[in-house]
Every structure is written in structure tokens, then in C-alpha cells.
Length: 490
Image 1 (cartoon, rainbow, N blue to C red):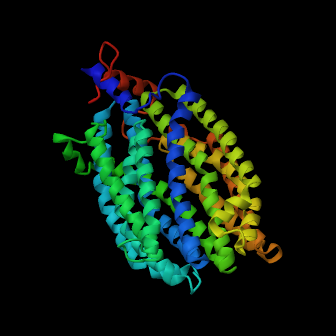
Image 2: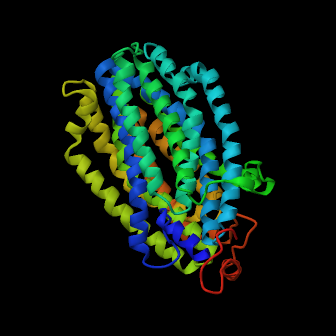
Image 3: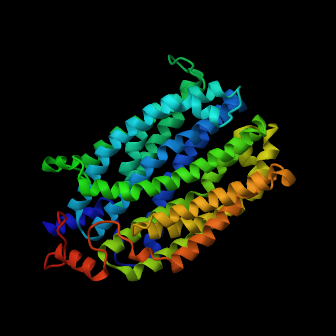
């Protein structure tokens, strides 16, 4: 029975991160995660095309403002999801599936409350935040209509994201890919229906884009839950395990202690982006629209690095849980090499085809097109450096070190990036804004490399469980049967 349970884990998509070749395993796990990211980005880009072509540049600028505000409010909750992913990964490394289910139960029940709070807070504060961002007056009504409905979709989006992250922590990257595909197809297909009012549906304008996203999120979440139980995936809860939905104090403390700094990392990134958007807004609607479209392309450029960072973190977490410290540096090195090849290749490709790519959003005759091309040429190359730092942060975060990545990001985003943007503006003009992006990314990479090589992240702790190599091996062996299979209930 135990051998059957172990085999079932692999049949249902869980990869074995603890043995075998590192490079190919990492790449095969990262590719579905990359596919999910590309689909999510494609969804945003398709929606931007609908909005830009049907409703104009003011509406496109409104969605740029609205999406950044949404990201800011998502950040804290996202940090808790990342912490849960690492805890699940370490539990799977110890072959403790029951422990992973306990983490998922506590995280899910906590996320429900957090998701509702984010939605309510976003609805209430949306007008004040748009005013704080110096959003152009003619854009505010559109941005507010879009943003408030987006907040209603937040609980579904947050819950689905958390479940997908937990599945990746267990080694399953394919299930999130399929249900991200479902969400993208629904969102992209429903956008023109609600924007234009096709068939019996009333015309909602920019609010229709947000309505389509809300429907897609909730339908995909329901389908994902049905699939998890229909396939009896390892992280599902049944019978007495529903008691795990009552938050476990020890797990909750760890999620808060590690998730809060990781959420603050997202806050630092997004608040810096919001501050930058405030500076860009002062350049006028054309520049704001150009900047918003450039961000759409940047989302694709950084997708390989984000996927590799997540894959490295999950793979390292499982090996730390199993005590396989000799594999950690090799996983990190493979992640960096893949990042340079994939992200660097995308930067080169985008430089060659930037005009037709940008024209998809703006049209070939838009006055924002040459501005967007200039922004892309000045700033995009910095994402190669930022990708290296994402891989390094993924490694140190998997062992519970979340403070130094936060400090490094704060220094690079504020003293470096905003310092360049403000300090050089008088003599460089708007180019100071665009140049600040790659300069901040290079600074992040340099500090991340220094910390990875010389910092004390290997002595950090993520859980109250064993982290010493010998203790981890003993814990893993305690869950094994004499024949070599492991007990999935710990």
C-alpha cells in the first residue's frame, strides 16, 4: 500500500527533486511554471489590447494605474502564500505529506479572511489611492470603475493563487498550468463580450474588462477544487483532515514571521513602481500609455526568471527538508545559467521586434509608439541582472532567510532607483526615469551575489523542524519503511 501511495504521487504530477539530474529536472519543472506565467501575462496583454483598441489611450492608462494598485494590496497576502509554498516543499522533502496538508489547511483558512479584507479595503480606498498617485483627472473615472470591480474578484484570485503555489511546492507544476489556461481563455473570451455588450449582455465599457476577470477567477477556482478532489491529489483534505482548516498556532506563527517580510518585499517593489508611476503620470497621458504598454512587454521578459526563481525555491526547499545540502548550490547554479540564456534571449528578440510588438497595443500610428520604443531600448536589458537575483533569493528564501532580501530590495528600489530618477531628472529629463530601472536591477544583483556568497543564510530556520543535515536525514529515514518506500502520512 505504501509503495502504491508513493507511486501515486508521481503519477499525479509530483516530481522527485531529491535524486537524479538537477539541470533537466529543474528545467522540466520550471517550464510549466513559465507556461502559467506566460498565460497570465498573455491574459493581461489581450485585455490591454481589447481596452486600448476599443476604448482608447485614456482607458489603457486607467488600467495601468488600477493594476499597480491591485498588486500593492495583493503583496502581503502573496508573501504568506510564498511561505506556505516553502513549508509544503520542506514537508515533501521529509516525505511528510500529512504535515504538508496541515500547512495547506492553516494557509487556506487564513487566506479566506485576508482575501475578504483586501477586497473591502481596496473598494474603500480606491479613490484616495488614485488621487495620491496623481492620476490624470480624465483617467480617474475609468480607473475607479475598473479597479473597484477588480477588487470584487480578489478573493477568488487569491485563493486560486495560494492553492497553485502550494501545488508547486509539492512538485506539481502541471495542474496549475491547466487551470491558468482555463482562467485565461475565459477572461480573454469574455472581455469583448462585456466591454462591447455583445448579444444580450449590456455594454459595460472598461468595467466589462474587470467583470470578465472576476467571472474567470471564480469559475477557475471552483474547477480547480473539483479537479483536486476528483483526482485525489496529495494536498486535498478529507475526513478528520478538515480539522486542519482550524489554524495551527505554530504553523500560523511561521507563516506570519516568514510571510510578512516576503510580503514586504512585494510592497517595496510595488510601492516603488507606484512612486515611479506618479512621476510618469506627470509626463502626460501619452507617456503614461507608452509606459503601461512597455510594462506589458516587460512582464513577458521577466517570466523565465520568475519561473526559475519559483522552481529553484521549491526544489531547494525539498532538498533542505531531506538534508541534501550538497545539491543546493548545484540547483542555484543551474537556475542562474538558465536565466541568463532564457532572459537574455528574450531581451535580444524584443529589441529586434519591438515596433510590431508595441503596435499590437497602441496601433501603428499612435503618438505613444515612439515613446514606448525608446523606454524599451533604454531599460529592458536590466532584467537579465534582476533574473539572477530572483534565483539567488529563491535559494536563500527556501531556508527561511527573508530579511536580507527585503533589505537588498529596499536599497535598490529606493535609494538607487528613485534616487537616480529624481536626482538625474533635471539634466536627463524623462530618460532618468527609464535608466533608473536597469541601474536598480544591477544594484540588486550585486548585493544578492554578495549575500549569497558571504551571508549567513545557511544557518537560518524556516520551521521548528530539523534543518541540520544529519537531523533532516534522520527525520526522512524515520518516515521510510524497511523496503525503501515512504509513509505518506508521516
